[in-house]
Figure 1 (cartoon, protein in one colour):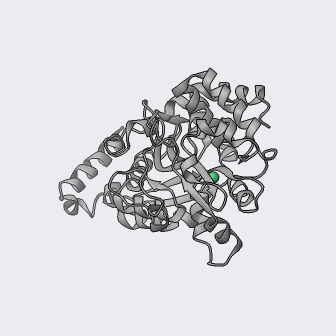
Figure 2 (figure 1 turned 120 degrees about the vertical axis):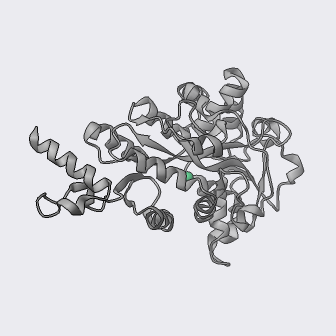
Figure 3 (figure 1 turned 135 degrees about the vertical axis):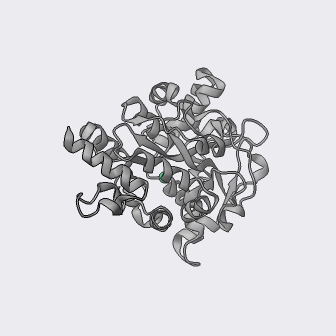
Length: 354
Ligand code: FE
């Protein structure tokens, strides 16, 4: 007890600038040592090289050291669950709200508590309880063979399931989280019956069994296997950014992007986002980093490097993306997707979507 008293006296002296008076008789007070800004630890699905410039800028501005563990999104969530209270992670960075909702359901995240988040990010793109937040937007829309499809024949994602598109569509497998989230959003918006009718129509219209990733659907359009593909737009953006004359650049140039549902609900969008882990040891630093990633400067760099859309209003996407023109995004709250993902998976199973 007496030792404690001396220490707090020393600290009080230090704080009032009088510590020098007692310097000879008292041990150097702890408060005089430079307080390190500390660190923040990220589990990121996104490769460190992509976000490094941003993280370096954050460290320069705040003095906070950032440590990144990169990995596959599902593996990172598993790791977080297994580590429990001993996890070193403060932030989980992941893509697709479906994964953020899984983290939320697993109980490994906590509310972010930030006025900046609430002001900057539209309500549809963050958790009502604050347990996850979007940092950028990714759109899932329709792509078509320029030489075989008149874009005037395109309208909505729902219309792709109609008779006009028999054997013309390439889309990836039912196991893919992008399709699960898109269908779950349809269930939330249009009801389960309409969503199932759509899924059945899509299966009837597939040009081939689902295979490969989004990029492979675009390549299949270029190769003439199908006329239409459903893909996230950033893959198209990356292909467009390839060297002129390269295979993927030529694929992208032979394909047009069509913004679906512009007369109705708007194009389906999803997020790449962040959550603060439940057992974050550096919570304040984690919130500071998330707020930094939402700043106009960071939003520009973040969206530029990955061909996604800034989530913050008033920040322009990279020129390749801007060239696709403005579009109306579906404003259905992404938090609703979680309520309908299981149903979406069952629907795809019932209609034979492989
Ligand atoms: Fe992706």
